[in-house]
Length: 312
Figure 1 (cartoon, rainbow, N blue to C red):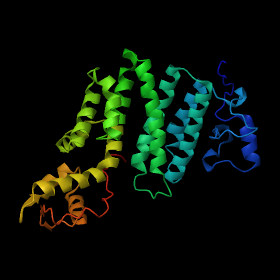
Figure 2: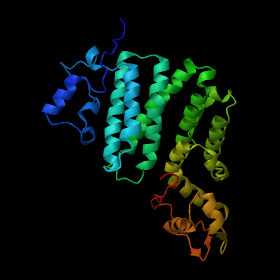
Figure 3: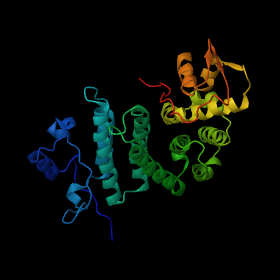
Figure 4: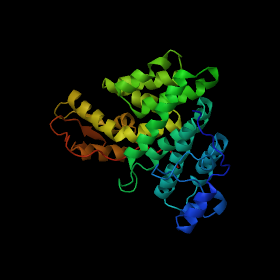
């Protein structure tokens, strides 16, 4: 049986526009009636999602993504969590339309990358939001669903024209899951391409897995901004591990370590952030030095939710 082909040439089917207007379900970001965007919906009895007139073909899906990420994402007079929820829902609808129509690998390679970048950016942008305002687990779930799909496609259907995309997607998956052996295994088929960005991501992840954190502060600034976003989200956890390891390795009474050097190792922007980090774990700070003591380090306290600032 051939997959159904979409016939809706607008971002939102007319019947959905009429229904949502009648039930007052128009989102505050859809104040322009000509720029309403199809909602994500689940299949239910008597509600088929595969009707051609409600499905948008790939060119319309690409235009919808462009509108969401270029126009809606730039809105600043609405709280970002509301903007995020709206875009996330509409991007899920885009993926749903594409899945129902069984679009080609070429179409998927145009549809998925901007969605993946959005979820990577959102993980960084919304990091300090309350869990009731932003669900980081659902966001990373959507990220992984999309990126695993495109990596599967790249394994099946890749050539020189997709090398740059392959480099970005594989390396982004690795640095989102630093120290994850299973993710590194999935990246193995791509390492033979001798791609610098993939090799750099693999090397960083292996070093993190083996407890060697020097590579982190050496290479962080050499990664693209979107990669820095997902690395930054992991920094609070990594900083705690680094400090604990240093307290084990440098443990000695009255052994003080310079805050200036530690700041670079922990990727802090300012020394005061490093001091706050040390004090959080009950380490003694004297002037511009910290006493690295195994007995003083408190492993039971929460991580300091401070990430590296790289974006405006």
